[in-house]
Length: 232
Image (cartoon, rainbow, N blue to C red; front, side):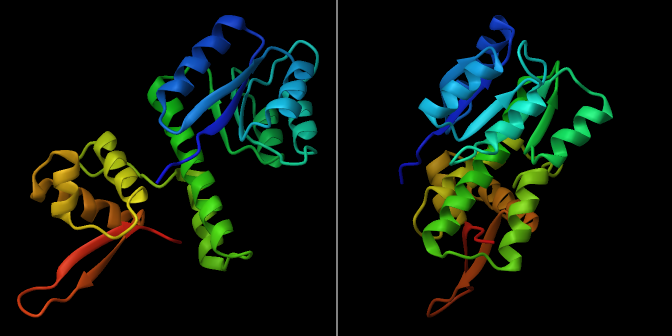
């Protein structure tokens, strides 16, 4: 299954910082940079021509407040998601950004791991919305709750002791791109790990609600555990 990259616009008045953030975006699978803007006016031009899915927004811009730009972005025919990346850490800015529907708020300076985590959470939310949209016009309460959980925490919680967050994501991403449910043996073969290790990661993901487990009964012996990405 081919996943369309999430079109991302970087908005930061610092040329060097904007380039660094663009480099970070390219390192996260499933994203592409479609533009870099250094002012609110420039950002609006890019939104009109490039139609980004996501805007990484600094709140300190030379010609307007980033909060005002967020209000303008919300008026676009297809409003992009917004992740604030700013040195502004006072509660007035944070509250205003939350009130305007910001998906995440990342305070400068930060490590790439924190940046990647926010983008992956947005990617999961974006893909889940696309999946729901392709299947039906309305979402039930369980699906709505799942979407808001993705916005708050992403699908991957802190991994249990002894498990790697990167491997957790690799297992989850494998299930997302697989058309049918899979077994621990399938995951082990695809990712080059032992079957018991694959089973540990699958069990942890199932406990977190990121994937679903079902039993496949054969003619003899114990039923086989099969896994697929959660559809909530």
